[in-house]
Length: 147
Length: 251
Image (cartoon, rainbow over all chains, first blue to last red; front, side, top):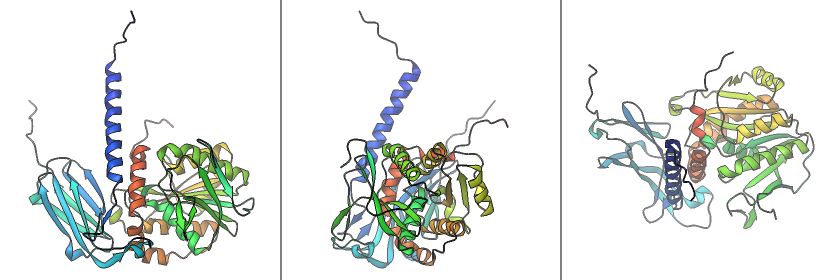
């Protein structure tokens, strides 16, 4: 009879981490395998980033050539925001060095998933050097007092 | 054709020995890639070699309707610039960097420069971008100091420039890593321009960066997709370790 080695807590944690990593890889692959543009809606998907600090969730988006006056940030759900912006000029594939595709782009649009609960009504945004920065205060939980 | 896991650097025209090599490979802010592409264009460098390997995805660059390797070396006036037009899979970084440094050693490279970014969270608020450096030996550290480049005394480097420095030490090649403060996830032509200006001083060349800065928004639009794919590889190579504070150290 073969003796089955009991898995330690470290083995279990390692397996769990590997599973999460493989899932994350799969999500990244799926996200990557679609174009970052849509000719039908003349939309480019901007590069976005999300950072969680102690008090805020900070969302940034790279919006080169965006008209600052046209930037709109709306809440789709409690944990999902949409960023849209019109571009100052139309950008054609040709302008991006691509001659074998047809189409032009007039706006940016993306939806950003928020990782923790936020108070969207208190969000603030600024647009510096073509980078949009949205600061969303995190919702405060119940504070446990130390006796 | 290269066999499995084999990397060949194939020269299509003669590259002289003693050449200075500049590596601009995909990393944070695509600082090196943008800087290398700008230098190739402004210095009128000519395609001199390409990388042949099965470690990259099955991708080619079409140029005037004909296939080209996505990693190529352009040369002129004793300067060879290595540039990649695709994100390099994290699994390929080790063998590829080893091959590049091996090639630099065979070419008796006078010096190897690797250009990249140093991610800073408040990058868009910075008025003046600083360049930091690291080197493979004491003489190169002195070159950095003489050119008023602040040395990274202690910290982590992750990615192509980390391995280039490491392998250059092993091969006794003089090498310098130049890292400009940059965005992590967004193409950063302004940071690339600052790195080029530092190289201008070090190599006594005069690459004009005004066009690169002026066309910054176009560059950012064009480089979006490469940045997206590079982001995924940066995550796989645990690039965020550069933010880590090194462990306790007694002098």
